[in-house]
Amino acid sequence: MFHRLTFILCLLCLNGLIKAHQPYNILWLSCEDIGPVLEAYGTEGIKTPNIDRLAREGIRYNKAYATVGVCAPSRASIITGMYPVSIGAHNMRTGNHWGFKQAEDEQYKKASKVKDKTGRNVPEYSVVPPWYVRCFSEYMREAGYYCTNNAKCDYQFNCPITAWDKVGNNAHYKNRADGQPFFAVFNHGITHESQIWKRQNEALTVDTAVIRIPDYYANIPVVRRDVGRKYSNIEELDKQIGQWLQKLEEENLLDKTIIFFWSDHGGPLLRQKRAVGNSGLRVPLIVRFPDKRMAGTVVDDIVSLMDLGPTVMSLAGIKAPKHMHGKAFLGQYRSNAARNYAFGSADRFDEHTQMSRSVIDGRYVYIRNYMMDQAYTYPLYYREQIEMTQTLIKMNEQSALQGDAQYIFQKSLPREELYDLNNDPDEVHNLVNDVKHQAKLKELRSALYQWQLAVNDKGFIPEHDLVNLMWPGGIQPETLPVEIIKNGKTIELHCATKGASIAYQLDDNIGSDHWQLYSKPLKTKAGKIAARAVRIGYSTSSLNLQKL
Image 1 (cartoon, rainbow, N blue to C red):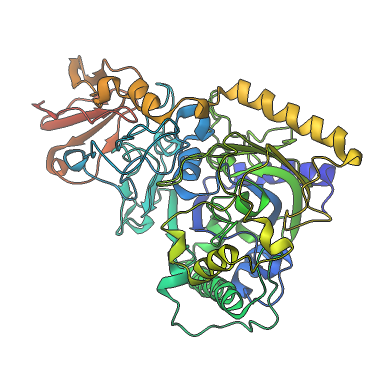
Image 2 (image 1 turned 135 degrees about the vertical axis):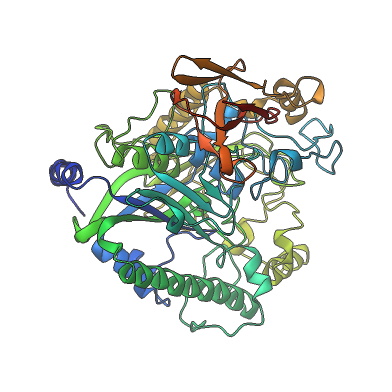
């Protein structure tokens, strides 16, 4: 593995190169629901030549983790640089926030089938983090980057109009101004959990006889088929990544663009997606710099997906605000201190409510379960559309599962779990009562509790009450209107709502779907201006339209 001191020296050289060639474009090629099941990470029985190319020509992170093993809370942490449990974004999911909605289309159901841990109704809502929390993409826009997201948001709050220059299925960096650097996100859904059943009848591209079946599954034909479907979907993803590399080469952008490849969490199968241990949180992460600098580097430092935003900002020469929990792992403001641990959480998943927390040091996994009077594998409609899941549940009901395959069907959760990934990569041998591991148990238990106190873990607040804390009386707060002030030769925009971001449009752009982000006074000229403001979780302010 790459020595940390050597890596730091390379980074110092790289930082100088970045400054000399600023600004680079930054491209995120994100995907969904995969752990590091790739050739580049040593997985056998799968061919991923294009992602392997990224790894050969870039930096491969061996110990990258999501904060939650499911998309919406994970994406909330990525866009804010904050732990979901610290901003009340830990429950999956709070409303229909998958894609961007115009302010007038933002709606929430008052009643749902969802109950919190006290049995009370949980309405749809938009998470309201502390006033100082912003989408990190706003900092990139302020620095002059053209920022686009195609197309998934799912931030646990309606995507603010200030977050992106363009968001949606048509969002693309090609619409930027001449010479303007871009930060663009393109999400790939081919590996999502739903594609296991939606592509069930597609031909498999892998040999199911050679792929590895985790010890927590019965090694039966339907399991091999669905694991093969997962592998085949990843191979299809690899083709899509190859198309991107070809496109960038054709556009003469490959040597001008930093590429990040990552998945939003582990998965997509049972005991992977939504799991709070290694199987649910560990993800692939590869960063390729232009001209293949640092090609083939392998890093064993622990990084979090929550670090992605601060890292992108650092590469753009922007220092992340102190409130962010994420740390830059590359660029001008790269953190000098490596993470000792990765922390994870599991709370409500759709109609099922639970509460578990985890800490991973790269080898050992410690899990603390707070609601122990429930089965290890709980009922959940969405994932039970996968045939192998249905089959395993029936086999368990018939007492037909044995050994490690029965482990994930325990009737109740243990209070604590401890796994040694070196000797038990599938996390099926709980070492909590092993005398040889008591020191490690105490270390990780203490680390977890200290972290929960430090970030003010809101999982202890029943969700019904949490909603009322953010939306007093169950009513969404409103962002106050923008005040437009002419001050000599400049125009100033102000909003009395603390923490609100302001967007504006000028002249012919008024009424379009593109809003400029206000960050400093504007020069006056004849024409018209329209302005709106929004704080995360609040409804967007009314429109203020004035002649100049």
